[in-house]
Length: 68
Image (cartoon, rainbow, N blue to C red):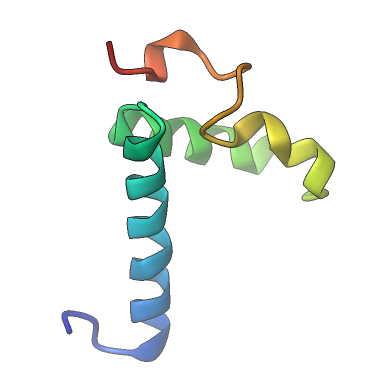
């Protein structure tokens, strides 16, 4: 509705999905997105096994991302 192109709508949907998933898992959405954007450029590969630590339900996420 607010996107000008189909690609913009897909990107918006992906971002909203990340935000809602962070909320559903007790994370601060902004801090969670910032953490992802800081970490992704430094990933050695995009293999599924290596991405597990970045998922919102991972125990290896910093406590600063969690809502109290």
